[in-house]
Image (tube, rainbow, N blue to C red; front, side, top):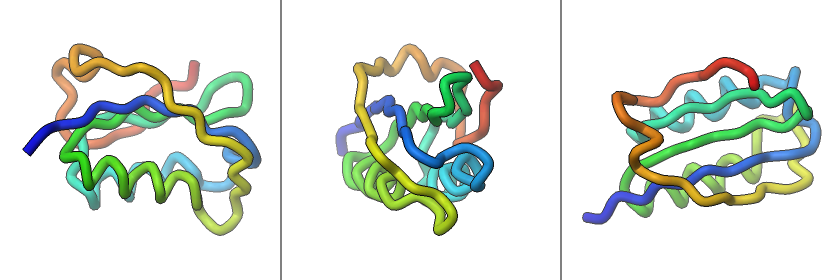
Length: 96
């Protein structure tokens, strides 16, 4: 089973609506390693790693978001396994 690492940025109404907690729940439910955080520009960023099918399900969940959110765009960006050094499980990270 291959492990996929993905980083993505979500824009829209994604701060102040429980989006990070939603991703935290989904990431842990899918047994992913990684984190999610708010960004100063109003977006939410996530870095996640796990089996291909679990990562695909995580991205699909992020495209939906929690009921109070509105996802305008989800943009994937390059990610590397080394960025997850020492990270086990899924957590929230500090805003950048």
